[in-house]
Image (cartoon, rainbow over all chains, first blue to last red; front, top):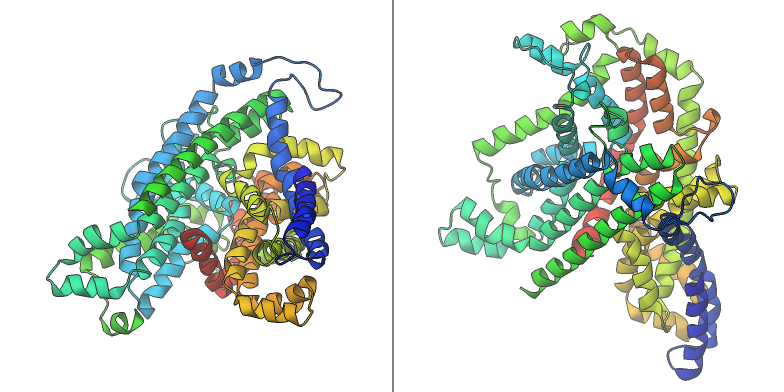
Amino acid sequence: MSTVAAGATAGITTTARRRRYMDRKSLLPLLLFLPPSLILFTVFVVLPMVDAATFSFFDWNGYGPITDFVGFENYADVITHRNFGTAVRNSLIVVAVSLLVQLPLAMWCAIALAERSVNINILRTLFFLPFMLAEVAAGLIWKFVYDGNYGLLPAIGGAIGVEMPFVLGDKLWVIPAIMLVITWKYFGFHMMIFIAGLQSISSEVIEAARLDGVSKWQIVRHIKIPMIRSAIVISVFFAITGALQLFDLIIPLSNGGPSHSSHTIVTFLYQFGILRMKLGFGGAVSVLLFIACVIVALAYRRILFKVEQN
Amino acid sequence: MAAASKKRRPVISPVQWISLLIVAAFVIVPFYTTALGGFKEIGELRVNPFGLPASWDPVRFTEILGGPRYFSSLGNSLLIAGGTVLFSTLVASMTAFALAHIKFFGSKFILGYLMMGLLFPAATGILPLFIKMRDLGMLDSHWGIIMVQVAFSVSFSVLLFHNFFKELPKDLIDAARMDNCGYIRIYWYITLPLCLPIIATVGVFNFVGSWNSFLLPLIVLNSEAKYTWPLGIMQFQGQFGSDWPRILAFLTLSIMPAIAFFLMAQRYVISGLTGGAVKG
């Protein structure tokens, strides 16, 4: 809110100072155009973050005054929570699989599908389709695929004579099963970013290399991939922040189970903070997640800066 | 760049083709079995996973279409997504216009402030957001969800609009200013009509985001009559447990409108992705 006021007063003082650029006519549009988004953004995006930080230092169940200051106790509770380590580990596995499996797969497909040709447009659309699908629907479809009694996986297993486990009810298999769904759901998104990058490379460069007798895969390795570095950096960023906030897909698939072995940070927050209305505990989880995102964002800016310098 | 590449024949090796077809099968098989599963009997699912169903009796589909849940949850989602698109387009384009065309002290700061929203997942603040909505009396209401989704979408929408508005010819705005045309009229009569492609892109993006959203409606809505379709489908699944043919029929019917919409609007989705992500 204060930003709105600051913006408005700043507008008035500038009017006085720089008549050439700014006249009184600008004031009314500014007062009309800026506040709606600034107020909504501040109230529903920024303030909740601030509140989360405040709550994290109190013991509060959501009702009555907030008085019970507990210092860093909530943070200690979160870090020593039995399932927090699992949730963090799972989220890191999602990051790793996204970077090591999903992005290379997306790149492999993008290199083929970036060639302009009508008959492969349909593959591009097909690969992008899971990304447009609601996570809940994708989760339920795969819950069926994995279902131990009626699903596709045991049917395939039966056909080749292998007894398949109930993967979503198995502590060992549940994480790889979820990773496969994540790859299915999101690789098309990264592929589209890569295709856009690849198609923006000037064809003269490629043509020149080809005339010089450079092989196709050398062109990919030494020209195409280096030239879409910024698209890759963006993809990596989306993959990491997406992995850190994974929620919708887990709920229909495994709901964090079996015995809390497949929680991510956000399902952990939902299960132990929101459902039990433990505001302080939930606030502490939020702050830790927020800090993780800040670190990613800062590292990302540094890397992006380096990429742009080159 | 187009001239040379158009003439060239596509250079995709057999290895690439095979791998693409494997990936295509991986993508399509879950959709395929879901669509057919609604027609199969439960025992048939196990013994005949890939084949066509024994009969094409649409009884489960008609039952769902005739039931109370399907159309009401889809209608609720449509209302919320429509409201979100309308208000986010209006609010974000106004702000982007002010930041792109009106010179004032602090405009860079405001843009930077709004862009903070791109870096942090909305999920981090979900618990305090719940408390805030409760205190403001916004729980269990579609309006509450619309307002919050508009707030969530502001950063990305302003970014896309701002990138587009910056590219508009300055002379156009200056000429209108010379003719004593105020900023509000410039916004409404000049900028918006010129920006229909970007409006479509932002609109499609926010529509899909709202249509698919789950966590926010999950914590906000209590009464079943107000449920959006993701909540409805989760409830349906909970109710029918492992009656998969019925659940698959419900799933098929629920995702069909979205797939049809995507096939029509994918151009805008992709231009938003590349405009916002790669260039931004």
